[in-house]
Image: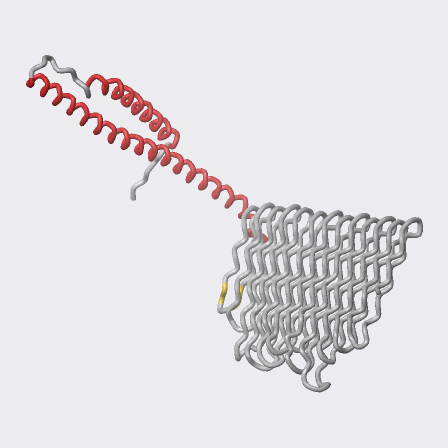
Length: 483
């Protein structure tokens, strides 16, 4: 066995010396070029002229060869210098890894987890996604959860970080087959580091199968954050297939810690011949400061579409998120209900606006006669505020179709107790039957204007109009009623 001992600092010195030698030779060649490439003839006869031309030709050939040698010399110097750097980097890496191994050995022996370093990604073992490894106690990211391939099995959860680092993403749930008719849920995202980091995103659920009442897999929940950082988003619910299949529910967004925003909820899965999945809830904001995030949108279904997810709320200072939208029904006969819009998140206790609503989904097309009941979904209510801030607006009611009534519009949220305007109500959904009622305006408390009420949806008869919110006790105007 042969061994090589390399001193990187000596290689760098040698490269520098060679570069200086090359510079000296290049300078000498440049000085000689003018005197040797254009030699004056000793006399005016033909022999003298021919001899001078021969010497000049030899000088030009030398300069050409010298240029090639200079190029080779420069490449050699660069290679020598980079090799020294590579050896130095390799030695530093070996020292670092040796040091980390010594540092991590006690915690790995006691807890099966390093002190510093990333957790390993989860693998797929016999079709089952394994959980990602946790990151180091001090520093390191959690590993991603493994994807499942065995029918109906949930994806692996993402690993969590320690003090500093990001949580790993959840793995994908497996699709269904004849042996397991429901899709697997997505894996949950790993939590962020206690001091700083981002939560991992939840995994996507697996699809259902073309059989009776097959469920699409639910999306995985997003990972939470703690002191500083953002939470992970919820995963997507997957498609439900077959007769009366159900779309998967979207994963809930992760929650903020002390400072930071909550994460968005995942959208619900669609259903080709059944009910759509509901959207996941938006994550709550950090306790001291941060915004709540939006709820996920509901998935479209033939009979009943999924409702939008509720929005995340703020705690002390920050804005509430917007509620997710309910999906429209895809029915072409029979009953078909549009999904309800999600509720807007509440603003922070000291400061922040309430989140806007989600809109209700449209109802599907009713069947012949009076067998259909394709009602529109109700719009979500706007979120309120606490001390200072405006109320969120209500969501529009979904349209009914055929014999189905229009969905009611959502009411506006009330404003903060000290200052702010109430949110406006939203219009009711239209229908050839009864129109949806308009939403009421939100109230002002101490200083501020009340929100406006909304029109009822057009129908036979029209929907009732919403009333305007009250103005502030000290100052402010009442909101107008819907016409």
